Image 1 (cartoon, rainbow, N blue to C red):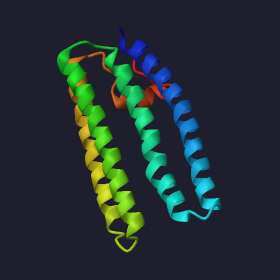
Image 2: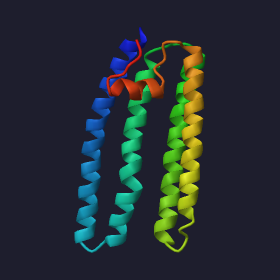
Image 3: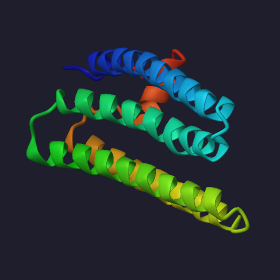
Length: 156
């Protein structure tokens, strides 16, 4: 499968997962609103801040992983795809833990610095894994190529 065909598959999977994430996000927002208007404000905050972003992230990461696994059966390629998936899941779990601790103890605003630092580390790790995938499989669609392709500048 060529890189362009892979891009097309990833792009379609991305559109599907965006629709799924929007529906899930809408459900979470409505659930939080129900808690908010019934007087359960703390529970509403937890639902909104601890479920909304992680749920959307999970849907997007899972769709990308599932699609990437269809492109190459090489054990090294599959292993690095799973590494990227599990590193994304670790970011989501740590994000949830840090946000819960911030919601329960608002005076610890320095926790936000940890969130930013950890997300920066995860972004760099994901980039390194993406480059390793490109070395294993020359037709791999890197994050950079995908982002450029979404706006019409896919490399020939």
